Length: 372
Ligand SMILES: *[C@@H]1O[C@H](CO)[C@@H](O)[C@H](O)[C@H]1NC(C)=O
Ligand SMILES: *[C@@H]1O[C@H](CO)[C@@H](O)[C@H](O)[C@H]1NC(C)=O
Ligand SMILES: *[C@@H]1O[C@H](CO)[C@@H](O)[C@H](O)[C@H]1NC(C)=O
Ligand SMILES: *[C@@H]1O[C@H](CO)[C@@H](O)[C@H](O)[C@H]1NC(C)=O
Ligand SMILES: *[C@@H]1O[C@H](CO)[C@@H](O)[C@H](O)[C@H]1NC(C)=O
Image (cartoon, rainbow, N blue to C red):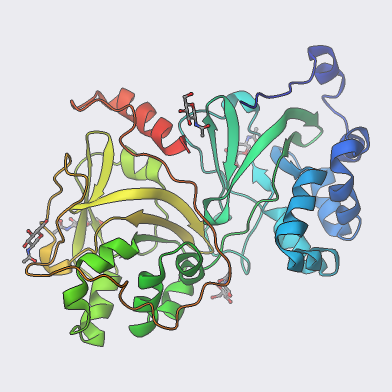
């Protein structure tokens, strides 16, 4: 298990007001790659040197080395200052978040990454949460990074050194393709909705897994483009980025308007989150323009009253008279450009089957969400 390496108290007091450049110099063992990259983007250095009330997530030398090894195209960062600036802006959080403020209940702070790299009002988000005494940061495709050195004070706030370079979130369609949600990606393409959804700002998308599409496979072949588009639009909440904590805090049940027009219903049952009768399998995957939550059922706008069976491990399809197929529908011609496995959480882990008190539930769901 990885614990914070906290600075000795005396040192922390001494460094309280030091400049960012001093932090980089004093930590050159771990931050020399970041330091040399920063030299190519003086505007960013200027911004950070005068910033107040920010949290800098500083990838270690090992983090950059791993990124380069994993993705040779990432050397582009050394040649493309605009790209680098965007990536670095995603590593700066608005607001100072000290290590002891990273808790089992996740937080979704805004970063300095704005349009055109992200279309999330107030700035693109990351997730920070404490998992087994390790502070983790989740970025695009829900990829985790560990805080390896916490609470290095500087004049503008605090620096945490992290184990991975954060992944800037991709569009909803790209996120679907590269996380194995290829049926959804293909269905969006077939319905002519992929570009439209990618181009929106501030969306929440419930993304059925491939198994969910397989379960209604007998019906997918005969859907008209218009019917398919209606079903897909029923999975989209417009003008609202709702992370799991917002969904949970909203109470239960909650009715929300979708892009299709018909409302859907959110429920929490036995410490799990349901959308109509679909269970949320993986919450909180950030995208360029909001967030995706993976669900285990395709939602049916003509069956908005479908309710979950919270004790069943697999929910019945929300379409009557369908049978499952073996091959994932809509996936022909859908080719991933990368493979990302989002950090997943067992949504029922450690949660009592009786309805818990609201305060407890909030904490408990946060813990589940944070558990990798
Ligand atoms: C620091 O930033 C956070 C997030 O933007 C904000 O909520 C908070 O009020 C700010 N605090 C100060 C002292 O400026
Ligand atoms: C954000 O929206 C603008 C304007 O619609 C668009 O030009 C830009 O490509 C979008 N950015 C991303 C990352 O999708
Ligand atoms: C649909 O959801 C909206 C909130 O998004 C709510 O104001 C409205 O009352 C809901 N409609 C129905 C029929 O429940
Ligand atoms: C609605 O969904 C339930 C499963 O939650 C299913 O049993 C029922 O057949 C569906 N009804 C329609 C009209 O699709
Ligand atoms: C957290 O700790 C529990 C109990 O020791 C373990 O089962 C689980 O795998 C750990 N989770 C992570 C993400 O390390």
